[in-house]
Image (cartoon, rainbow, N blue to C red; front, side, top):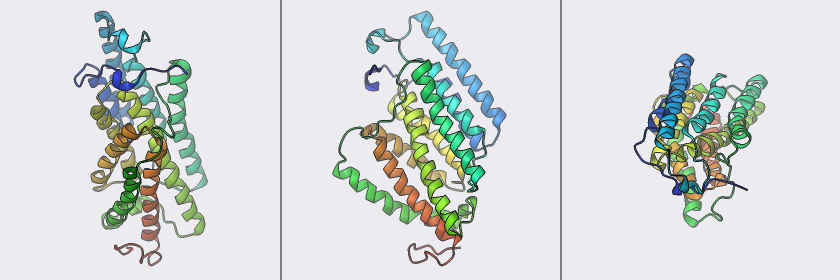
Length: 297
């Protein structure tokens, strides 16, 4: 299967003209999902893509990046990669992200979030004819002892932090009341499905595309802007960014080191399992009081 070389071999300077359009595109996320100003998000996306076009045209006039770094293949263009991220964000921003559990809401989330992953992948694969977006399930092979230890650490940290965050801040009210077996089951499916989607879009799509142009740390910070903005509208508000920013950065770092979608998904699902339990605890006083040190409201 033809593919671009390992991203580490690409020329990715810390300061380049590409950074400005990437920042503009990524800042569209807080416009869409935090400020809830779609027009501002559209303006930022348009400005970012126009700036990317101008950067590419300027590079073409100067001769562009060294072709030998890409084994004779055309180097990845910042315009096309940012256009894939923009397409995904536009699809997600087309629906309200308020957590709801009725059939129509779950169908709306499935279509929009699924489209935000599928459309960039198909365009990259069949229109741009490259393999920029991949979903490496096993990645670097068997998990190490440190990786297994981190899975335990995620559960412990979630148990220590999440009940206090959700209940004392009141953000649990951003999720619907789940007081029947049917609603609890729907919440379980919804929380897990969105958690998996987070890794498919923010890490395997946005982070992977940004890493083709920027150093790993820069690319990780840029994807975290999009990741955290989405989580804000989803319900992680109040002082939630204190948790979601390091979580987004860690997920990007872990994926970069392990190259394993399976591992980052497992980390996320373990964290979300605690989120699910806390939400059930918060909406059903007395039901799970023995499980957490913070009593239900």
